[in-house]
Structures are given as structure tokens and as C-alpha cells.
Image (tube, rainbow over all chains, first blue to last red):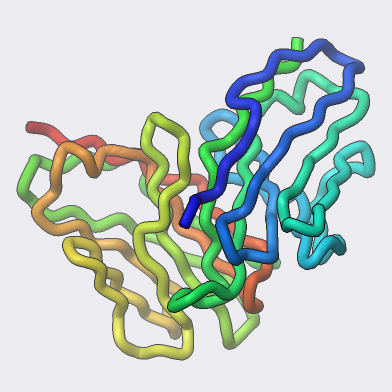
Length: 116
Length: 114
């Protein structure tokens, strides 16, 4: 059983550019949640996807958008990057799999985004 | 609004001793789930322990246990026989519906002295 993976590990962009971050969910999980973690802070919820539909959104502007694919992997897209978008972006998956509950989110290693 | 508060930005413990990390939360919901996650310098958020609010029995995972006081909205983590590998940032979190968004505290940085 593979865990949650994210790519790329690190990314450097300039203000105004667009970025796509990717996440592969843990085997058997059908829900993916994205979080933004600024330096020295706890993660903040961006949005969640369940079976390819957005299933809840945090207080983030529309330039943060997402997608979930039939294999339950997911993308986070951020347009018109701002300096404050510099953060660690975490993906978490959850869902029914043998012996595990549906409510626990398992995290990937994160993508460190730096906006210059 | 649901909030999570960790009042200890930093804690330190001697190797092999016991340490308790504090967490309080605020919610009007009656059914929810509580978690402690560990984030080492490698950045990966690792689940330490979880507790369902409807269960009165405190959760235990090896050296990790919680003291869940529902009326006081308190959820502390006790680490027994601390090891050097326990050094990390610890986050308390909860969500109030199955599979919903996690709400995190600000974290407590734990250092373990040899």
C-alpha cells in the first residue's frame, strides 16, 4: 500500500506566474484535501475533493483552484502568484480502506513554494 | 467559530522522561474527531493519535496517550519515555464531521535533550 505522494518537492516562481502542484492519494482513498502552511504556522484548509467534486472550501480566493481525477489523484492550481503565497502546500488523503476509518487524513511530504 | 489553541509554543524534555502538551478547542458541535500530528524537520505531517469525541475512553498508542476532557474542551498529549526521535513540531487538530476539513492549532515545538 503506497502512501500519499506530492510533486514537485520544491518550486520557485515569480510574482504573477501560475503554478500546478500534484498529489497522488493513498491507495483506496477517494478524498483529497489541500492545506497551506506558512512558516511557523499551523496548516490552513484550502479545499477538499471527494469523488472528483469540490466538497468544501476554506477562505482562499478563486485564483486557488483544484481538480481531482478518476484515479483520485489531485492538482492544486494557483494563478497570479503573490509573495504571500510562499508556503508549504500539503495534500492529505482519506477514505475507506481495509481496516481504517473514513475520517483520518494522511499527509504527503508537501511542496515548498517560493514566490520571488 | 471553531478554533484550536496550543498555549505552549515550545517545550523541552529530558530523554526517557514524560512530557505533556496542552491543547484546547472551541466548538458548538457535539460529534467531532481530535488528532495529534507530528511534523519533524522533514516536514511530513505524521499522525500520532486520534480520538472520537463520543468515546469516553482516552486513546493510547504505545508511548503516546491523551487526556480528553470533553466538558473542558481539552485534549492534551502525554509522551512517555521520550526519545530523541520525538523531537518535532506537534499540532493538535480537529474536524467536526466525518472526513471534513481539519482545523489546526499553532503548534508546539518539542525538543528532547539527551
